[in-house]
Amino acid sequence: MKQHTSVLVIGSGAAGLAAALRLHALGARPVIITEGVRLGTSVNAGSDKQTYYKLGLTGAQSDSPALMAAGYTAGGSADGRLALIESALSTRAFFQLVELGVAFPKNDCGEYVGYKTDHDPRSRATSAGPYTSRDMCRALLAEVRRRRIRVLAPWMVTRLITAAQQGDRPRRVVGVVMVHRKTARRRVLRADAIVFAVGGPGGLYRASVYPESQFGAIGLALAEGAEAVSLPESQFGLASFTPWRGGEFRWNVSGTYMQVLPRVVSTDQEGGDQREFLTEFLPGGELFRRLFLKGYQWPFDAAKLSGSSLIDMLVFHENVCRRRRVFLDYRSNPAGLDFSALDSEPRDYLSRSGALFGTPIERLAAMNPKAIALYRDHGVDLAKEMLEIRLCAQHNNGGLAVDPWWESTSVEGLFPIGEVAGTHGVTRPGGSALNAGQVGAIRAAEAITQRTFPRHKEDARLCRAALKEPVPSARAAGEIPDWRRQRREFQDRMTRFAGHLRSQDGCAEALRHARAQYESLSASPLPDQPLCRCESLRNRQLLFAQIIYLEAILSQITSGTGSRASSLVLSPEAEPIHPKLPGQWRAAPEDKKFRSLRLFTRFDPDTGRCENRWEQCPPIPEPDRWFESVWAKQPRKTNP
Image (tube, rainbow, N blue to C red; front, side, top):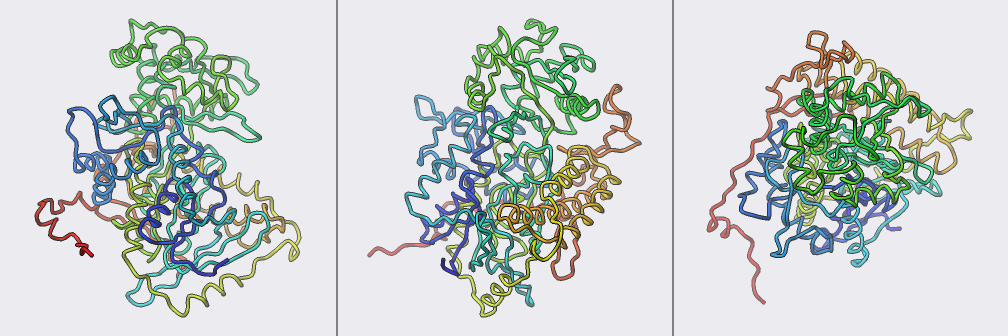
C-alpha cells in the first residue's frame, strides 16, 4: 500500500462517492477509505417516499436559486451563502444522478414533477421511491467501479493526523491512522487533502432511526480542532423498529404511513391490554387532522405542539412514562373515523389520491404500494401485523463548520461533506440533505483540484509518530471493559438528556458523566480481538463527540434560545403543553433573536478547552448576475 496520496475520501455514502467521481472527472486520483460500501446511512435509510430536494422544474410556478435559498434560511441560524450555493447547484447535482440512471419521475413532456415536503413553500421535492438514497449510492458506486477508482476496505479511520497551527497558518491535515477491521492491523496514510464524508452521529443515541451500521465519525475531526456549528440542531421523529437478520430494521413512518390515518395503539410489554390511547387526549376530528399532518410535518417541532407535534409527545409519554409499547395498525380504521367529518385538508388529499375509502392498508395500497412492499421485503406484512414505533433521533442539521467551498473553517485541507457538514440551520426542507451532499461534493472537488496543497518535511515525522503511539492491549492489563455496555451507557445518556426534551440541569449532569466515562475509557486497555478492538476505538471517538455536543447544547440552553425546532427546553415558569401530560413538561418560549445567529463550538487540542460563541448569520449574497461581466471573468481555453 502506498504511504501517500493526493486526496483521500473517507466514507462511501452518496456524498463520498459523488466526491470521488467529481475529483476523478477533474483529473485527480482519489482513494476511498471505507469500512464497507453498504454500511452507511445513504444505502440503508429512507422513508415512505424518500425525498430529494432541488429547484422546481415543472409547471408555471416560478422558482429561482434566490427563492430556494430563502426557503433554506427561513427557519433561522443558517448561512445564506451556503443556502444559495446549495440552491444554485441543485439542478446540476440532480441531473448528474439522472444521467447515472436514478429513476426520478418525469411526465410525458419531460418535466421532472415534484411535491411539497417539510418546510417547503413550493413543490421542489422529488423521489425515486422509498429507497432514493440507496438508488443514488448504487448508481454512483457503479460509476466509481467503471472508472476504477481505488477503494480501501474494510479499513476504519481511528485518527486524523494534523499539524498544529503555526503563526498565521491554520491547523492542517496531514493524513490518517486506520485499522483493518478483520486483522486489527494499523496503517498510516498521508494525504494533501481529505474529503470527510462520514455521515451523521448515528452512534450517539439509543433511540435512533439511523441504520445500525451507521455510527458517524465526527469525533475524529472535533478532537483535532475542527470547528463545529449548530450542533444542538438535531431532528427527531417517529420511526419503526422491526427484527431483521439478527438486528433491527429502522424506518421513518412519515408521509403516507401517517396520511392514511392508521390506528395508533399501545399495549403492555407482553402485547396485551391494547388501547387507542390518543383518544384520551384528543377528540376524533382533531386527532385525525393532527395525525394526517404528521405525514408531511414528520420531524418533531416545538412550534407545532398545538398541532401535529403533539402526536410525538403523546407517543413518547405512552412509551417512556407509562412504559407501554406503541404501534401503528393498518388492518382496521381508528375508532370514530368518519370520512365525511374529516377536515378539508385530509379529506381533499385522500380524495384526490383516490384513497377516500376502506381501511388504512387499502388506502396505503392505493396511494403508495411501495410503502407496503418495503416492509414486506423486511419480513413485516402490514396487512397482518402491527408496526412498533418510537420517537427517535434522525438527522443533525449542524456539524462541522465549512466555508463556501466546503473546506473546514479551522483545519486546512479538510473538506467535510454530507451530513457531517453543518450547512443547515434550525430547520431545513425535507430531502435537502441528499442535495447538500451532492453539492458539497461538487464544491470540494473543484476547490481541491484548483489548489496546490503545501507539503512539509515534518509531515512524514508526524505520521510515523502517530503510528508509534502506544495502544494498551489486553495483554498489558486485567479485565477488559465490555464495549457494548460502554456504548449502551452513553447512548442512553444522550437519548435521555439531549433528545427532544432538554433542561439545563439535565445536560450539565450528562456532561459530568460523559467526561468521567471518557476518562475511564481512555485509560482502559483495548481488546486483542479485531472487531472488539475496533468497536472500543469507535466508542472513544463517539464519546468524545458526545462531550462536545453536550457542551454545545448546554451553551445554547444557558444562552436562552428556548424551545425551537426539534428541541423542547423545559421551563417551570412556562405553560403546560397539555393538561393531561406531566406537569414538568412546560416548553420555554423561543427567543427569536437567536435565529439571526449561529452557535460555533471548537475544542482546542493544544489547551484541552472547548469554547462556544455566537456569530451573526451571513446573509444570502447578491452576487454579480450581469451576464456580460460574469462572462468576461470566465477562464478561457485557447484553441489548439
